[in-house]
Image (cartoon, rainbow over the protein chains, first blue to last red):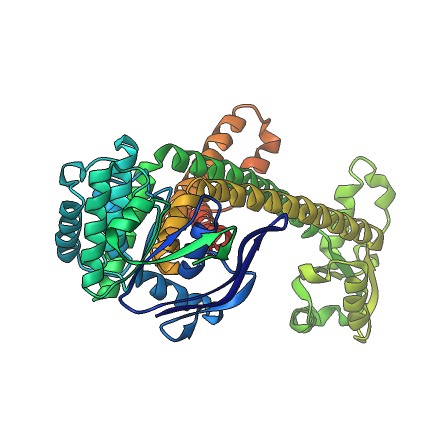
Length: 217
Length: 296
């Protein structure tokens, strides 16, 4: 379970990104975070992920105060989460296969199992034919799918996706949502930030709306 | 089991990184090599100068003239002196030998010695003191101890020369320390920044690994392996540069100055020392530089 209490985030230059956000996402829930550009969606996801520290407030994930966790306990928590970044964050010097495999290797998983899981994830996102390519030669949509495969391959407890369909055509975007639904059906809590209202309508899931850094719904 | 696989991945990552960033790795190794070479060359020249200075110093001695009635017990007296603290070497100069030496010194003017009996010159001990006492104060301490012996007539030693020598050594050592510290600082600065730049170019990769939940040691170790390999290669390069520069300089440096560029250490020690320095600098340098980039 993810709980946020009175979260404020102000960036340098007194730019307010989030203001007094209190929300709760149940374990195994599928939630959309929506709002126009600059509403604070990415900041909210990154705060849940722990890569941005809020200026004020507290976050409790699975009963633990996320802001009081000692640094050495952060990696194990991150291994339980999958994050799909808007800018993909793929390592350009490694192949698609290695980018996805890295997320399992850091967990200490054996090579045979890594191979099996990576191929499975690649088949989910329909990118088996790109396994040995470097991310640079892939299209934006393909890179996004690699990022999705890397996040779901470890079967995370929490999946956070920041505009995961931004570079995909409508059919692929829907397929991606189906993948998220399937991951969710296996018990993963899914939080997807998107401004694609039609996609949200089709999925019929709980939606958290942000505007100017405040919760509006 | 998990740890075993992680180690496997880390080793593979370390060597793959080296392969993938080969040009940068070679550049870093060359930088380490030249920096260590300059430092090693300075240490070599200074060690050689230092040892020559001490060879001069070893010529400093004290002359202890003994009373005539004690001459017959010279051997026993020599043993007493040898046992005293701070005395390195004792040589007995008999009346005969003293007269012979004087005759040698007055070569061409031997007439001056006509009618003078050999026995007029006193027998003496030529004493060399330990290096740490080669200062006016040290010599005074040794002399005051010897003076207490009943058979000693007089003691002579060149305080002025010792004074000059001691201040020269102090001057040399202070400058060596200043230059050595400066060179060491510069070497560390250059190596640290080379490593930092290499790591900075892969800042994003480190950031991604953190996001994926890699432990600190999982991220750091491949870089440390890389830094260590670069450092070792740099150390070997520095050793080769020292040998090459010795050879080239030996063609131009006049014979009586050749001692300055001689290798005061064995080739194995030279390479061993430089490789060890490269290994430590590369490994520890990478580790320290990484700490800045972790926790993104």
